[in-house]
Image (tube, helix red, strand yellow):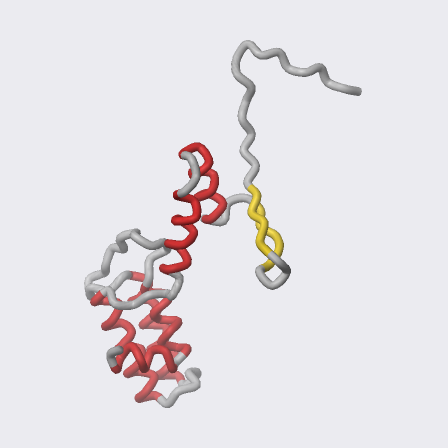
Amino acid sequence: MSTTLSRLTRFPLAIAIAAAAVGASAGTSVKTGAAGAPPDAQARYQQERAACLDGSSPQDRATCLREAAAALSEARQGNLSDGQGSLRRNRVERCNVLPDDQRIDCLARMRGEGTTEGSVSGGGILREKVTIVPAPAGVASAPATR
């Protein structure tokens, strides 16, 4: 592991910058700004730099500035990860075993569409997405009950 990456894991401030540097989803290309970093990473760097300079960071100024710059440099090189990549891949792999019509709904649930309840510690997570499908033309609808 490189020295820069090992330092990033010790400092929550740098981890926040790393998370901001990653696109909204895996495999999505992120446009870079004039400085070569994703715009959100550049903005995050500016925020963290301001926190370093005004003393609101828990780190000393020199360390804070060095970590913010290191995280921005890693973002420019595309070396940062939000740690969610393997979770996203696992969600997609779970859905890939399903038939096409079910896979689309499964992927939608994994993206957070629909409702989610439960917890891992409670025994499981239930994800539900309701899709209303109109009846085929020519099929008589059931009479309304009163």
